[in-house]
Image (cartoon, rainbow, N blue to C red; front, side, top):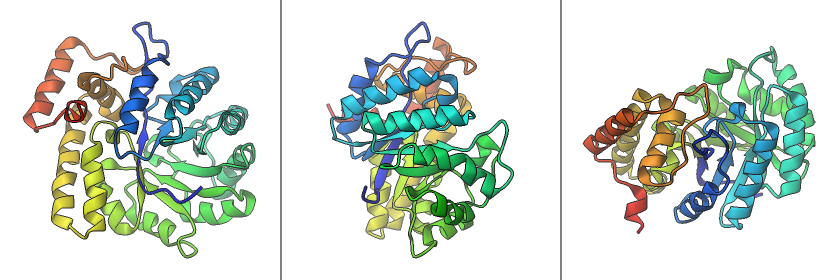
Length: 305
């Protein structure tokens, strides 16, 4: 697979009123993704509430995304789990189902203590889908695993020929730069913090994986284009739109809870998050809408219709 550029949306998992996965909702969701400049989707990651889903649910969700994508955008399957056997099973399923790539977050209950431990955990996962690029999903704030990523890439490549890079969801930009420049830019480094995308691109990242891409695609596409044209003033202004939006969703439980609520507000109707993430009452939806209106948030679906 060619090196990715631009936006990869970390997708939300649609739920119905009973808290069960709503596969049908992915159909409209995929049509929305295909109508934007988004290049691919990252399925069943943190935004997709992967740790609250069963293995079978994750398989069904991925299959639906692959069917609905119709080769109009890439589908990257997150196969991470605290259970190695489950992760291997999901990787094998992703390859068989026609995913374009796989990624995995580090186990976060019993944690790898060294880079070698992390390589040993991921090697069977990567080898379960040898025809697909494998990416390490680095997110220390959630996993508590903060091992040197550049060392992991170097050591990991000797054991995993399909290790292609890292989803770097961390604000350690010095380490990110080290990963980007490693071995003459051998690896792909996907920027993972939407609110500082501008900084990641300046460091050399050419692609990003983010949840807010789902409802601010024109803003982030504009940042990528402005940076490509050395138009830093425009990129800064657009990044401020991102920052203000992120500040709002933080007030409402963060990118998963608050972000999914925004998806409902714009009309994609993805339902609520699964417990233990709490449901937004009508009062809070009204507050969220008022706060978005106050910062000039524009419904992207209405802009394209």
